[in-house]
Amino acid sequence: MSYCQLVVFNLGLEEYAINISYAQEIIRIPKFTRLPNTPSFVEGIFNLRGKIIPVFDLKKKFGVAQSERSIDSRLLILELDNMMVGIIVDDVSEVIRVDEQSIQKLDSEIVSISKKSIQGISIIGQRIIILLNALNLKSEIFKYNLEKELA
Image (cartoon, rainbow, N blue to C red; front, side, top):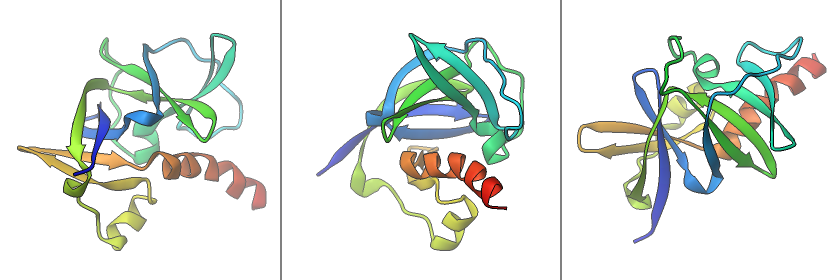
């Protein structure tokens, strides 16, 4: 059996996960510098030990109902294709180990609705955890600028 480790986090009432190999660190939400003419899901940039990190709000990108940030809100720093990005999440709950064979793939029609950033679903007891494909998520985030420039 082949296992993978996932970082589980909340966006609204739903649980999401991303492969732990992409997660670099989890920090409290810092102050951002906003950038002009960026999509609403781009929160801005901040300095992390001398590196400029772009920050994205996945709730805005995924159309999840917005809520106030709480004391549990965190910034999950990911390394995607040698680029560091931060994603705002409501809470990071745990790291889990799942059998890769137990991850259920979605029908292609459903995946196209989700913009291909969903890799699959993991069911643990009564919990449904949506597993994100980190590299597809990166291309979805940065596709906006390319499409805007081509238009």
